[in-house]
Image 1 (tube, rainbow, N blue to C red):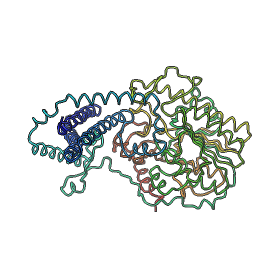
Image 2 (tube, rainbow, N blue to C red):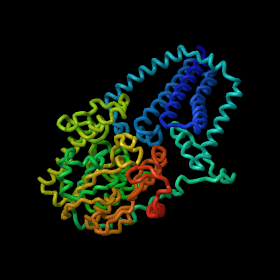
Image 3 (cartoon, one colour):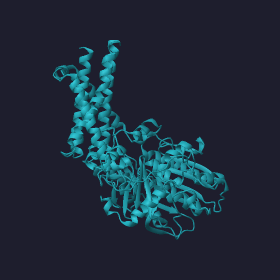
Image 4 (cartoon, one colour):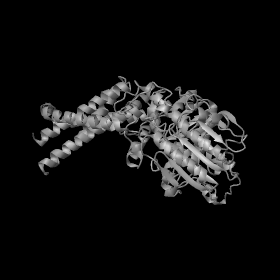
Length: 603
């Protein structure tokens, strides 16, 4: 077999795989007849781009050793086919393709562990690799691609056709983007790694009228962060309460239930519980960031770049607090060792990533209790629980839903078909989470430190089980993904249950005020003191890797580019789609207020 024939057979394989998933994308995204020409043209261009390196390798192969040329051709083909398959598997699980967020997971220490893959996943992957390589060898051996290619029109006609396809799909997208044509924009979302070309200014010059999707936009200014706008060393704590800050992975609002989490539910009933509390993000990064900084998640990237610690942590350190943090994940992913806990020493950061999440939680809870009971006061301690993280593991004694999926393998499980069994795994894992939170609460009571300790118990974000069409988190801003439990224990504060809108953004201001520090929250956050009689929040902001979403008492207005692709741009508060015409005057006023204030902490 010559190198030319080998390259042609590999090109045919890539083309067929691309075609297969173009059909999958067309069906799953309900591509209509009007947008089908754009969709076909875009996929033809994409398939050609995938195959282009094979042509380059074939040309270079004339000057390279034969074995190396064949090896490079096979390696590239296997790699690109694997990436195409991985892309669509990722999309079927989470609703997005390989992007900068996924690359961050892969390249950041601790990121792969955060995905929750298990031994069964790796075995299945190995099995698929063996089968895939066998099918690849058989295809290359027997597919007579050279006969197919020899029947193609002359090269110049093929190139002309591809050029026309490129121009057609590029112009179609540019006009659709300018006129907010949702059909074509949605069709482009079905194409992995689609490279959009926009030309709004040029189209305006041609007299083509554009139309914003909703007539409203909001952008974060970016640049150098001006945070905090107060010197932490000048803040003297008057009430030296200990602080125990407990955050549970993927803990959504309706899990705090008497049957699922009896101990935590009882504790909430005797303290302050916020019933309509929103995380600051639909993923761990933004959900954690917002509750310590009180800043919108869109500030994460600049805070990380500048290595700024939260005002709350700086104030505690300046007032000689003992500091210790525990996690059943890793502090390196997301990069909390460079943000929230950047001023902690290695001895003050304890991570445990061996075994299932519930096993790590048990070990860490034991260490946390030992720290609470044997550390000089005042102290701050933090704990991140992993029990409720996918794949949702738990010991037998925490099975309260026996009808659960026994083996949850990402690669081998039909999520939609088994979603009830998957959710039951989640419920059981939350029952185990309850047992560990109960251990901490009991320790504080028995050690006599409860009356001198602020306790924060919340989740980093929620978890969806196809209620709005997705599984997991980090995809959209549905209620299930962004609403979390919120419990506060403040010494001297009576028990209460609040139904008003509250946010992670309020936590720094609330804790600082409870410590007796009376400063204007506007100097360091977008939050307010939850305990103030004048507390009122007209809106909150929930963020992901790609942008913000405004949440008012009535609507959600999505500005994140990824979330816009996966869902609706504007919905009611319970995620029912609406249009810009349905936005009431008060909510438009709120959005204007957000736009004016979003860059407050930039110079």
